Length: 72
Image 1 (cartoon, helix red, strand yellow):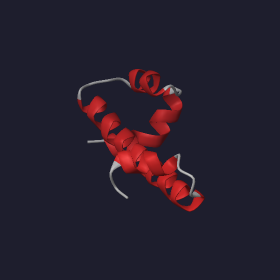
Image 2 (cartoon, helix red, strand yellow):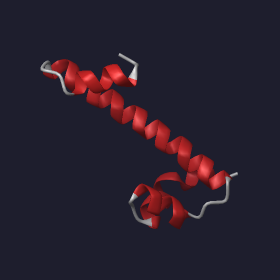
Image 3 (cartoon, one colour):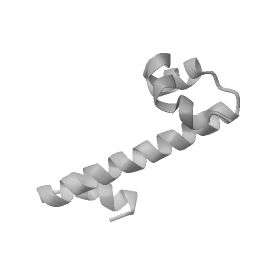
């Protein structure tokens, strides 16, 4: 169950077991993609404020979550 289309289908399907596992997998995928994009944005010179705005969170929240990951 690694194809995002399969995950999405299973997440809205009738089987709660498959659905819950799919939701968990989608959370993991979204977290990985967010981390990747925050890292890219910071490498390109984005401010924490710009990253936070794009994610719809506060600057403090995004900085707390990712500052350690993006230090060079």
